[in-house]
Image 1 (cartoon, rainbow, N blue to C red):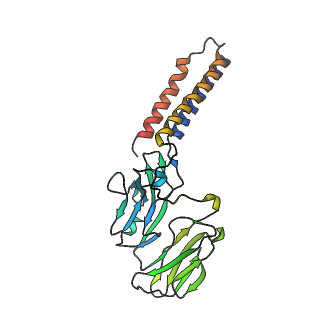
Image 2: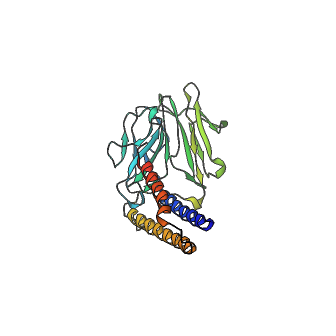
Image 3: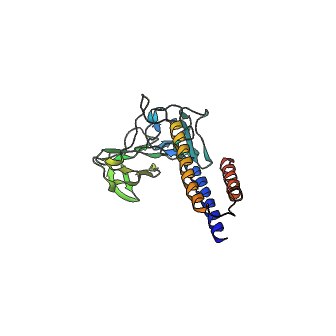
Length: 273
């Protein structure tokens, strides 16, 4: 009986691992690309227009723009695919924006901040590479000319600029952090995080006009299914080979609980939140 119990336990473990493998394989593949934001800055005044687009990422079409704001996660555009244009933005539009393609691929996210205040810090939306020059601008909604501004990093004052501009000529990892600015008499901007990456972490920020030669999402799905079946077959064969001398071993009684678990897991994953 001890051998029979061991065999049953091994088969169940094999099936549970298969279910978990399929569940993880169904998760989205994150790609190195980022959405394109226009105007190209993190912070925006209210009542302005913002366009977030994904078309051309990795040579693919049919991307949809998603957003995560205080109200939850939802499709950004009014249509299922295409760029997301938000006119008359408000502070409630602040959040994370990213691209999804056929529920298989997902881009990295960008942060967008919309403020009702009078001051914003204009900085890069995407991560910057070490050695590149970065320009930060402190803008007052009520004045078109540049004003004296104080710049802060991680809450510490780093520079006073009489032009409202702060230029870092060759950024390094130590420049990464939270930045904000203040214009006397006008107010303070929100904080924005600036990410600095090494050359080996260079990101795909291009909107390619030609299709890529990578495998299509359908190709990845086929490979995942084939790999899952192969792993399951090998694992089950090893377990059955080990248990073949046990006469009381009932394969159906062992499979049934695991099959029920797999069905329940799939139904739970597919049910809406």
